[in-house]
Amino acid sequence: MLRTAKRHGQTPEAAKPWSLVMFSVGGKRVAVRAEEIGGVFPWTEAMPVPSLTPYVNAVVRQGEEILPVFDLARLLMVQVSKAEPLCLRAKRQDGPMAVCIDPDVPTLHQIEAQAIRPAASGSPGVVGMCSIGVEDVPIYSWAMIGPPPAQQVA
Amino acid sequence: MSLRSRTDKVAPALDTMQVLVVACGKTYLAIPGAIVRGVVEFGEAVEARIVSLFGEACRVTDLAARLGLPPAVLTPDMRIILCGEHRARQAWRVDRTLGLEDVDMQRITPLPPHFAGVEQSWFTGLFLFRDTVALLVNPGWLLSQTMDAFVSQSLPDQTVAGDAGALAQGAAASVGDAVMPAPAEGAVKPSPARKRGRRKPSVTAGGGEAASLDVLENLVLEESADAEDGQTPWADA
Image 1 (cartoon, rainbow over the protein chains, first blue to last red):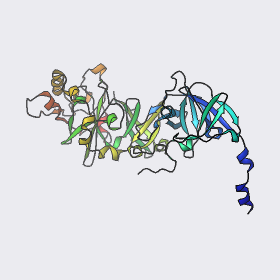
Image 2: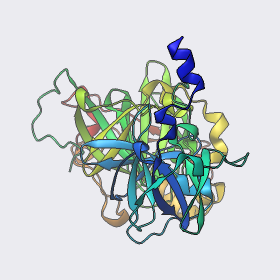
Image 3: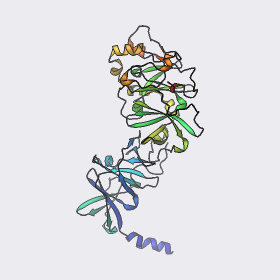
């Protein structure tokens, strides 16, 4: 019973502010929850991988590790600045991915949960909207974009 | 010059896999050496659309185009990789070869699950190669392709038929050696093996003195019968 009551009530977890990392891709500002970011590194040249998976068609080498590249710029229909882009390490349940972003260093923001607005329908991967400064910024979740982790190859 | 990165003749250990690394554009692909039967190196020969491997005709297909990558551009580095196992025969055109590599099986990791499409059946894994990555091609997939479906993805007809003189010259050149030396800027140089007369280069002309294109479509390539290394006879030069 205690557990049921807790579900209906306002838990401290739900009230916690969201830690968001804001960065830009092809000049478009987007945000992702900080726990879905594994770091930011200089971008190294990606190797194209023949692929029919939408937005996943390259790998990049980070030291001794090989990461699949998620083409967020293509999803947003923009082009990342070619001058020294950065590599955002995106955390996902099925393993990390690399995302090429603009050279502007990402910034961390704390946003009150109440300030998160629902995402407009038809925006794949967007879990909410928030205002950072004067900008309305979409909040993406890696779990909501790209192939679902449980998907099996036929 | 040889494709081999090893300097000795020691057979690869059981926990390693020998692969031929080739490039299709910026993508490095590793073809298991066990299915490679030869490499055609001469500039004219790589324009062929059909080659004969062990007496069976093989249509030459652009590997990059088959995989959805930008098709290969004709350069002196272009090669045809002849693959075969049991009754399966395939011939693939690639941009260039990068060499033989003995890959420790532990270095090979599966294609990340983020690649959730048919590409999982194209590649059995990937591994760190030089300062980048190479994709290990699934030999079963490579040998099971039906060539007729991809004819349109091969080199355009005008490329093959564009220069009859060059084609005639190509047809006259010996293309029986499946060996590696990289010709200097397109120069056609007989391999040491052929100088020694180890291999019998054979070109058969479809229709005798018919058009050069017909000749090129019936190139016959033979595997070395007396190579020292039974595993990769095509790799010695």
